[in-house]
Image (cartoon, rainbow, N blue to C red):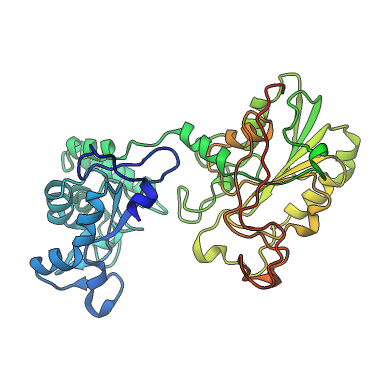
Length: 405
């Protein structure tokens, strides 16, 4: 799995040094370090009772193997080893993983792993920060009150309880990300599902020099909605919660300076018809969610998404950009929509969406799963006897970048 995600190690690479083989690969995570599968009675977050020889011979071999293959991250287990919480185990995290095995990637905590160093959780958070960070954890997964952690860590560093060399170690291991790469990932992951009624009537690439365009929708100017769950906090959050470029801002930065860009989140049909727009871009989708909170038996777009599509696309030529974590019900609106783009959850780099809509780059993405007509068809997969999708697995229209725009 490690070379499958990260790519094969070069022949001259050092053992234990993380390796991600180019922009088409992703960092892998080995977890949960260590002994998570050997807890008493198999109970989650329990205690693994075993001597050191048993731990190293039974539970450690997978980590030897992944580190040799250049795994980028290791996540620490909630569980304990002989009564010592793994999140506070300096001997195994720093002494063995980082020093003995010479792991050069970064170590990440589990969800609220710091809190659970004490029983009950969060009983002495300053102690938990001290123990966890000094144990060798480099990145902390803190779903809610991250400012409490930052304040506590800052206090401990300023008062010499945690050394700057420990902070430097963590930062050096983590600093591997870049916005340009994120923007490229957006451009390549977008899937063009519809582009006019025929090739001769394509709407995309959109004209940058149109006199007046409308941008509408709940997700057009909202970083949090673009990012979805597991962003800043567990369930994500709507609103401009972090630095980035919204799709609206990206559109304004991409079109000709003389083009008037009008933003109306939820316009009525009369407004759209009376304003002589050249075309409209509608950006709608799901709210941020993670895990069980995203469960849906209907997979419909939440209001006012459907009415925005109807009001805008029934009145002017339109592109609908869907911001969703999965295929959703779209067939009832498809006849009104001139062009349809599945943008999934593009994250902070909304410029990647505009880059492809306006033809600076071509559409190349393909559907990673079947898009259904109705939820009544589900489950539906390639090879089923009655396979009748709205858009089949692997579908995706392509466009060429245009210089004339």
